Structures are given as C-alpha cells and as structure tokens.
Image 1 (cartoon, rainbow, N blue to C red):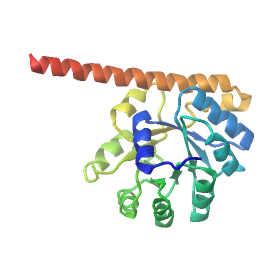
Image 2 (spheres, helix red, strand yellow):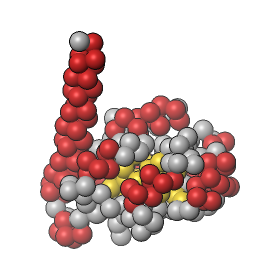
Image 3 (cartoon, one colour):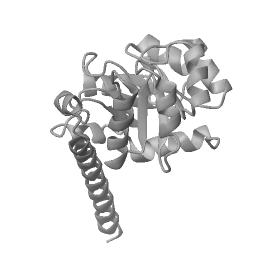
Length: 231
C-alpha cells in the first residue's frame, strides 16, 4: 500500500466527513459489510480489532482505490503496529492512551482516540492526536456536549461517534465536526443477519446523497449571500 500522508488523510476525512464503523463476528462478513459501505459511496471505513483476523480484512480492503481504511478498537501499541503493517491509514481507539497516540504520530499515521470528559479530551490533544472521537457521543450529551466543549477547546478537531440517523443527520452536519462515525444506521442488525449487502449499500448511498445535497444547499446559500452583499 502506498504511503499515506497524514495531512492528506485528515483533509480527506474532513472533506467526505462520513466514516463507517464495521464490527462483525467473522472476517468474511466484515469484508462484505465494508464493501457495501464503499459501494454506497463511503470513502473511509473503520475495521475494529474485535473483528477476527482484522489485519487481513484491513489489508484486503486497502487494495481498493479511492478509499482509506482505518483500524478501530486499538488498545495497545502492539495492536497499532499490526494495524499499520496491514495498511491502516488511521488508528482509532475508544479511550485515551498516550502510548498509542505517540506511537501513531511517530509512525506518521493519523491518531483518533476516544474521549468523553474535558480532561480526557485535553489529554488526548496534548499527547498529539489529530482528531478526538467523542465517545459515547449520545450518552455524554450529544450535540449539546459538543457545543459546550467547543467553548474551552475550539482548536480541537472532533469526530462524532453514535446517534446519527436520517432524522437528525442535518443537525450533525451543521455541527461542523471533522467526521461523523456511522454504525448501526447503515449496518443495521437485521440487514447484517440477512447478509443483505445491497440494502446496506443503499443506506450508505442515501447518507452520501443527503450529505452532498446539504453541502450544495449551503454553497448556494453562501453564493446568494455574497450576491446580496455585493448589491
């Protein structure tokens, strides 16, 4: 896999915003689930290290063009080392472990640790992480928490982990986070059990289409405001 510049990876994450989190009980299902998300238009997919043979899944998916695959639930530097060897473009954890963060940065890969308190968030930032995953997002207050934490920490990049659906999607987009991590809203339990990958791809595609439509609307509104101001 070609070397991925961390700044380019971050720029790509912020451009596309949507990231799928894949957690399955077999590597075969993980490949199918991730493939369906990619077919639906997702450009970033996290394969959690709870997936059996996660490294082989990451390695296989990393061969696909136009996507960047990351490793999730990375709890140690040994996990991180295995993930990088497999071709992971970013390292995601549910917690703050300075050793994992510093290892990722030393290796030149994007670091996204999970945090849920002001102290943890700032610890992650001071350790050198690139983006903080707010986890578990809904349980710690959701968008209200994000608004509050940006008061003292407006300089930190955030990933929103959990709670997004079609009804509140525009609110999540309007929060201007660096990324939105999506799991069960695309990888629905019933579809996963039925291995209905076509429907999974359809849900992924709907999120992508709605995001594109929202971004276009915002661009058009900015254009109208500019014309109005010029007049």
